[in-house]
Image (cartoon, rainbow, N blue to C red; front, top):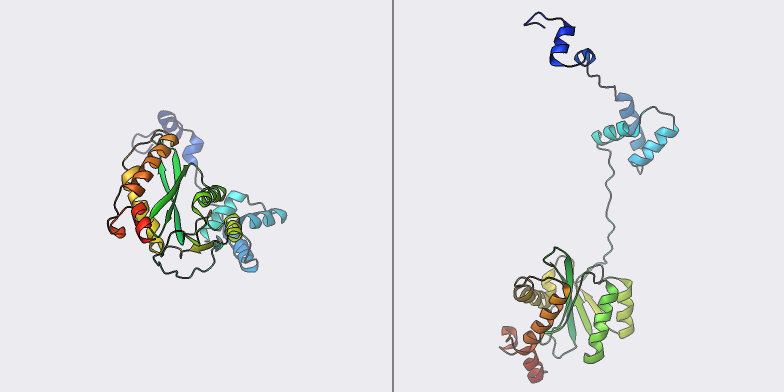
Length: 259
């Protein structure tokens, strides 16, 4: 309009916009009243969050919609800080003592991996701390507390009951179901301190070997392949593979000579 001397109508027609759009002036509504009300509510009602404030203002017949209230609520940083509930009791440091015989102390832990199609699966690894014997590796997509108990019952049937089982603080391992099972079988559950995997060093070392020699070394089409390969590897691990921690013997040889 200034450079070519066109009228408003001609200029808007040339660039194909509405004259209303050309004349539009952005107007930001005054939010001072909402800010005052929200700050007053936050001071008087410490436990109220955004949802309760919106409902309260709606009941008070205020004209502001929830989107505007939310925008100002977040701009004032009135969001409540929710404290996560601490479910774990305080754990005491349990020394990692080498057992003197079999079934004195077992260790168990979970591992994760995935199939070639991306489907994840888990493994439950259980070993005897005395001779590092791999007692069982349970493989499935989901391994809740009931499956942990089932695996332990199968081991106890042919091997006997351990005095204690060392484990971390996973949700399956702090469940009431597992605690009741341990009480019925007079098994002590030894939970390590959170964030201290070194306190469960025997099973952690086993996990590394299992990861390197099985999980990372193979591509799996389905869970059947995982179970079959794991079973063959377990027999080799216990009967053939020598262990430096066992004076170069296999777990079976060490158990027979030093039990």
